[in-house]
Image (cartoon, rainbow, N blue to C red; front, side, top):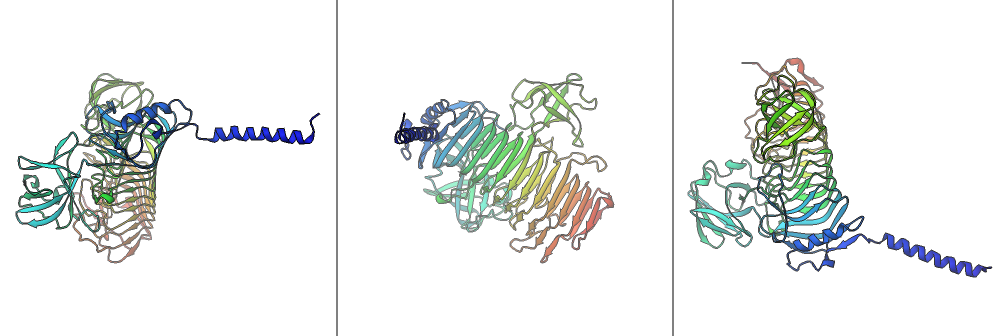
Length: 624
């Protein structure tokens, strides 16, 4: 028999073995370090081939975690994987060159540990394709030579402007009298301009797009005065302020910063995207997306005012849930967030169950627009009314622009050439919270989805409208009549609506593109609640709404700002056109708020209700 001492000794040994086995299993055995492949930070080696090997190794383990050490990693197109991708709202330039391609993964975590991923030439830093349960965290993306430039205004005269350009960061030549930027494998003429105030970092009031330098500004001729000092010879209709920064747009939007396609359950956490060759984070035909603690903004350590070439987060034809929390957007050359579907035009009715269709916008082509079993809405194009839905049987691609769709049942008899289709299966619920929308070229949030939308506890300083709810099948073909939107707890600061871009009719602008409005027909948007927010308008228009059934504007605090000079052509604080069931209630006014009147057009008086509202007064516009 074993004595007590032996039992204890052997039991202890057994327990140690158990603890050792458990410790081994708890160790990150599925953790793969980039340095194991010979790539070390700050080496300036082309990281691309090393990352390809590391990701292949990640396929051999169950729960892969790919780990960078903190430091700088350089990516050149050489040895990169290339793919043909048709990316929404992006110039069709293929193949795309991919720095990091996450493809066919069921699970993966990329841990950056604060790594700086520095891109060279035209590349797509991160691509997630046909993957699920992917998390990317704690890293930064930038370019040494960005695909947008900037110049400081050092002198302004009636016949010229002198710009100081960092020619190391943004090399340039003067070719045929024009300012042309050159980089690693590319050359691109300057074609767009924005002015940023040097102190506040805000876009200077009234300088959106052509208004920055006035009409025909690109008739200038450039002269080199000294290295980095360029004179733009022309009597510009508007002169920028000396000391301010001009962002000089060149190049196409042809690669996203992070591209997520045909994937699900993707999380981006604690990322800083300082620059991109196009849209910042583009997600299409993907579901259940989480973005938290992500900054899409300028690298201020490099003295930059510019950041992304275009939108910050762009969600095209997604479904499930989209969650954006504690994110920040600044210095973008387009909208921080855009959520929409893609409507397509019917070119020919081939039979009672088959249609020939076309992608109408040149930057949204080639996508697999529909799949068997998906629900499709039939849109009568003139009034933008969805008259019926059908179930898709087959999708047949004919070219980058055209395709055929077969339906399970007969297509409505009234649907004909020129009408449109909308895929109602790919519509997400959206939550955008605790985020900061600083000064960017255009608007703040664009949202067009029938899913449930919550926009709460954010701060807006956007140059145009803070929130735009649009939808159309005639121009951008970005579809999605909303059905349940709550906008609450947000702070709309004075810089909102300081420039007038497309669709900017109010700090909040609800403006679907409807060719022929029928006030008696069904509204395009439904159920929008704007309550418990703070507005700081310096100008008149606060809210504009077209074709909404069920709109509430209540319990908001509106305090006059004197930071900017009023300029907008719209002189009513609230404007409603062809809306139904509008309620204005209990709004609090501080100071000499300008927009006291409510403009009411194409609506009966009973469509507008004022409940305990002491400030806003309706002014009904009679039909002509």
